[in-house]
Image (cartoon, rainbow, N blue to C red):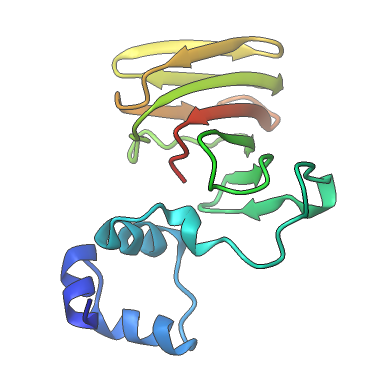
Amino acid sequence: MSIEGLAKAAGVSAGGISQIERGVGNPAFTTLVKIAYGMQVPVGSFLQTDQEPPGLVVRKEHRKRLVPSEGLIYELLTPDLKRRLEVLRVQIAAGFDNSERPFVHEGEECVHMLEGELIIYIGGDEYRLEEGDSITYDPTVPHWYRNPFPRPGIIFSAITPPSF
């Protein structure tokens, strides 16, 4: 695919893609998502390295960490994104609200509230989760998080198939 073709498919500038390709640009996570969409590959394919932890165990210090936007920190708990299951630990900052950019992806998702509280919206329905609560839903329905509480919320999220 040419730079111009990718730029058109992804909705980003050809100059920006050229800078990334030459290693002189540092793209924002949203730009990576657009490029992945344009290439029809999961955005996680850009994050894989040869430094995978060996075997089946992912040690805390070897988790892949991603901060896609202010207020979210993702940690991959599965060894990679080459499997049929993606498991994430997600920290959601106090005050976070992504209602303007809801999540939408294929598969099935289960979220378990490890710490704090969180409000999850699925379509037009609102669900308040407290520590120990879980919710399972169809992620093809637009969904978003809001944390109006004074401390971060930490969730465990299992998604199949991987959507990152």
